[in-house]
Image 1 (cartoon, rainbow, N blue to C red):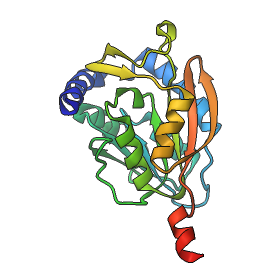
Image 2 (image 1 turned 30 degrees about the vertical axis):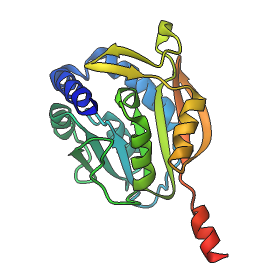
Image 3 (image 1 turned 135 degrees about the vertical axis):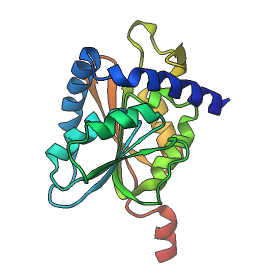
Length: 217
C-alpha cells in the first residue's frame, strides 16, 4: 500500500515539476523559507552537512547555501523530474547535491548530517514514524530537525488525512509531532507559527544517549 501511494505521488510531482516554481509556490515558499531561516542555527564557519527531505526543486537548500557560505547540502526527493529541476537551478555547485530516494529508507550513513529539514513535504508520507526513525538515524548527536508543515489544512480543520496530490495528505498537531519524535529518540525544542496553519517544530537528537550514559557511569 505504501509503495502504491509513493508511486502515485511520484507521478503527480513529476508532472508538476516543470511548472512548480511559478508564481504561487514561489511567493508562498519564499515567505515560509524566510520565516524558517530566522530560526535556523547552524555553525557559520564550518562545512556543516545538512539534509533537505522532499527537497523538490531545491529552493531551500539554495537559500541555506547563500546564508551559510561553507554549508554542504544534500537534497532528497522521490521525483526524478523535481530532481532534474533542482540540479538545473543549482547555484552552489559542488556544495549542493541532489539524490533520489525515499524518506522511509534514506540512502545515507548513520550520523551523517548536522541538520535536517522537511518543508511542506511531511504531509505526503504514509509512514511518518518510519520517516522520523530515519531522521533520528542520519542525524549526528546534537543535530536538529526542522519540520515545517500544516497542522490543519485551512478550513478542513484537524483532519488526520485528506485526499489530494496522488493520495492522502496527513496533518499532525504539535502533540502528535512530539510523539513521533520521542519514539525516534528526538526531543522537542520549540514550536513556532510561520504562516497561518503552517507550523515549525524544532527537534534535537541528544548529544549522549541514555544507554551511553549508563555504560560510562
